Structures are given as C-alpha cells and as structure tokens.
Image (cartoon, rainbow, N blue to C red; front, side, top):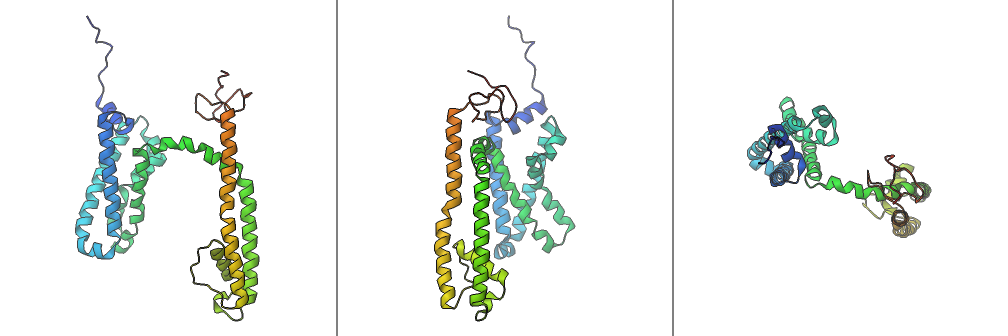
Length: 280
C-alpha cells in the first residue's frame, strides 16, 4: 500500500510562481511565449504611435491597444508580486522596476497634457528589456565575465589610448582653427574645430564642418588615414586581454559555487565568492 501522506498539495500561489518564474514546465513556456508576443506587439504599437501620419489615422486604435497591453502587464505584475516570497525585494530589483515601467507610463499620461504624455513613449520602449528575462538571456551574463574581466585588465591601456586621441584631436583642432579660422566661418572657435577633428578621426564625416583651404584639406586627409589606423587599436587590446584570460582559465580551476574560472592552481578559496575550491 503506497504512502500518499508525503505528497503535499501545491498551493495556488506556488503554481503561479512556477508558471511565471520556472521556465521549465509546458505551462511556464507557454506563458513566456504569450508574454513575448505581448511585449513585441506593445513595442511595435509604441513605435507606430511615434509616426505622425499613422497616429493621425489610427490613433484611437493604437490608444485602445495600448490600454489593453497596459492592463495585461498590470495583471502580470500583480501576479509576480503575489507569487514571489519577497515582494518588496522583487519590486526594488532591476527587473521589478522594468516590469513596473511596462505599465505605469500610460497611467501617468492621464495627469499630463497630450504633448507631454507623448514623450513617455520612450519609457514604454523599455518593455523590450523584459525579453532578456523571457529568453533567459540573463543566464548568458555568466559567460560575459571573461569579456568584462578582459576589459578591466586592459583598462589602463585603453585609457592611455583615449588620452592620446584626446590630445591628438585637441592639437589638430587648434591647428585647424589657425589654418581655417580666418577664411572659414565653420571653424569659428577651437571647440568647434575640435568637434571637426573628432568627427573626422572617427571617419563619421557629417559634413557640417568642412575645410576650404588647401592646407586644411591636406590635414583632413591625414586625419582620416589616422582614423582608419586607430579604429582597430582598442579592439586589438581587448582581444589580446581575452586571449590571455582564456589561457588563464584553461590552466586554472573553476569554483563549484559560482562557476567562475581562472583560479590559480594553488588557490584555496574562490576569488569572487570565497567558497573553498575543490583540489581535485
């Protein structure tokens, strides 16, 4: 005779929590798919609303759709607060704030005039950040630790490089002010000339500030060539640091608690969480 006394019924609150947060059951996966579709539709509706011609023709329909999305997101937000063990901690978390911003802007528009409320559309676009939670891309953040560590390790070299670029554009901009300033109203000040140098060395070339003298054009050519040469420098620095980090990780050990790698063979405790590292 089987003993059923050990099987505890799952409470309604726990069922809601599993559907919303677990991402493993068919019900939770279906919930994620529905929520993903709602987020994409809501963002698309917000983008359409920013187009004046579309807003003039279909403004009422877009407004009604926005209210429907808002009510659904409010219901989902309330369900999350109801199901989590620490509601206050969830509300103040990063994704808790994003979830709040998914529905609260439209209510704020009731207190503002139409012109001011129109600019809250940028806040509603933040709904797109919720896709990271649904697709579980947040789990991939652990894989980005090596990139973050590489950028941190190469921060000194990058700072020296940026300081060199800052010096270069300042000096070049000042020279262009002397060369072009007396004949070209576009180079009316040193800050404007520095702006030209930044736009030129980054090979953006807006064309709003251009030289007209022969000397200025020659300097511009050199700046463009230098710009092409220096674009690859920060990338090379970071890639080199990532290669060193990968080599360190391959020769080091991983923490069983936080899964961070790169520990020295003689390390006793994890550099990140302090957990004792298995010597095997």
